[in-house]
Image 1 (cartoon, rainbow, N blue to C red):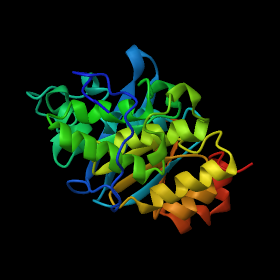
Image 2: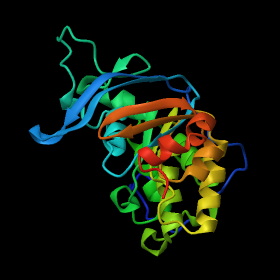
Image 3: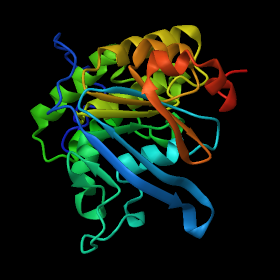
Length: 270
């Protein structure tokens, strides 16, 4: 497969899949958020004075009712809203740093190499004609040679158990397969942190189990925004609760999930 799109059309040439372990990253990522306040376009505040630190390889769940600010927070961690942050000349410390890099436009490219985001709707992230070409999109923009790009694509497909899907038309994928293909595209960039927005939404039991197992193998920093308390228990060690844009609780997973009053107060249980 000619992932560069140059030369002879070999779009139907099958991948040769080497068997080796889960994709390695440069290093797990540290995240520091201090007094982050944000509103879209001058509208009401979506996040209000949010502060927390995440150490490398921590596995953290973001819980909260719909509209709590979870998705907006994930966008900040990937420097997708850098215009909201203080300019480099400001005397105020940046509200979001990734490995001590301010999440500003100046550092956005490097931060996006370190923090990979999986959006809730795979349609927002999956646009290649075939699975292999879609997964190759990120590595193609990382100044890598063709052999390294090919190696990353094939390994990422192994990681998400889609190694037989490299030539599959993305329009023919199930929802679970689309989400795994999007995750492969993120993993192919070798981030040290995965930030996932409702990755299990609308998946059938098999799709949920497959994705849970994949995320369980990831050794970097994991930030998981979800409403699924069972998967929070399975995959994370710490929970941050957002409600109304504010951080309302931050504790070990077993502490948060064991507090029935807190869960009910913030709309986390039926």
